[in-house]
Image (cartoon, rainbow, N blue to C red; front, side):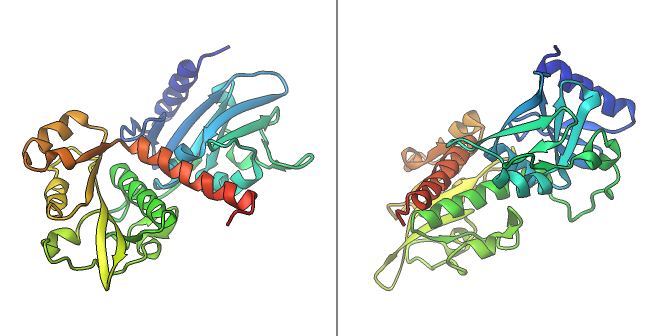
Length: 304
């Protein structure tokens, strides 16, 4: 019985021996790689008899779904039994797959590598995806319009924050209206198309903050929460944009995995550094999942 590490190493080696380039996508915590012209989340399962079982959290599936040309590679006990499922196909069939309250989907493949769906003898024919390595190279090379993984995850976090704000009843705004999350433009998700002007804030900085949650106040809006997403290691200009809200009782958040860099940068804002709150991207994902799950439970119990 091969371990997960052995199976993944063998899978990546097989790609390299076919002349397909392989690079890890370091902005994700999962085993996700840029392979050829595609982005692949690699999952493994041991041969347990009747079926091959995989656990897959919706949060991870969604992050890969937002990458260009993305797939999930399900390695069923051996790399010679790998099912390369496009994430478009997988996401569209998730409602037909059982899951728990935490969004963990119970993905099963039969011995002949067909995906098990709800209902007696209901299966998704995966024949086109079994050991089909050409899928990873057949898509045209990425051009200047392609979205790199760092930008894609930035968009995912923005989309999740907008969605959470909407669920919680805030008026939401972001400047990046043409960017997409789950195939939907962020401009279609926000509830305020133009950033409100505030008396004690630099409007040119304010309107460029990644995500803002407002509450209605008298005839205008009051900024309650503000979020900047810092995925890359460049100059963190987001701190300066958030600082323009220093005269408001607004909670400013920086979303990043880099705690050391966060601590270094907030030291440059001594008078307000205690107000900055550090969130890691995984925490945003957990909150997003919990909020969506609560909505689903309210529907289930007819508590709307």
